[in-house]
Image 1 (cartoon, one colour):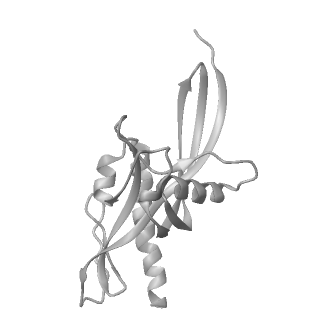
Image 2 (cartoon, rainbow, N blue to C red):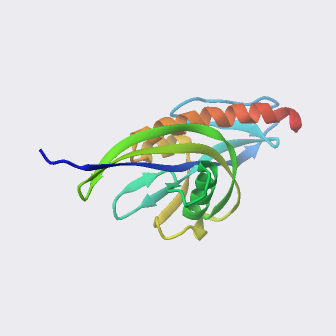
Image 3 (cartoon, rainbow, N blue to C red):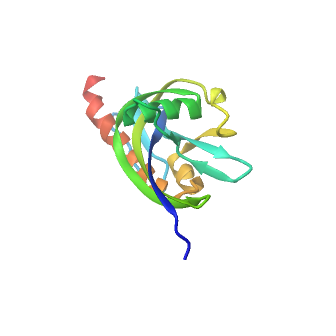
Length: 177
């Protein structure tokens, strides 16, 4: 049996979301549809669809949530914000911690045990056309479509948690408006 060196690795990233206006609305209550159906919420007097950004490698057929490795001296929150901004081209604001996923893989006779901490991040500026070269494709998707496209099933769970958090965050912020 071949023996591997084992390395524990950490990274951070998140679910970057925005509200994409659909149509004006007279309704004064939020409309929420759960998993596997496009989420709609009342926001700024319009019904809006919650969209999330995915990063992709077209040559490998991979779609993922943005994430990356810490640089010396960075907090895990700083890593999540920096990596999301670099990989998507968007300016983001950290909202909350979502959760983490763990997985293992082997590369060049080294077994990596990796933990990725995910955060909820609101897109507040920038443009996906400004993304870095790590991924060749960055696109906005409805939550339903993003769940269908994500290559890694453990990221789907993070996306569902993020969907619930966005709705709760909006309910909390509603009195401010």
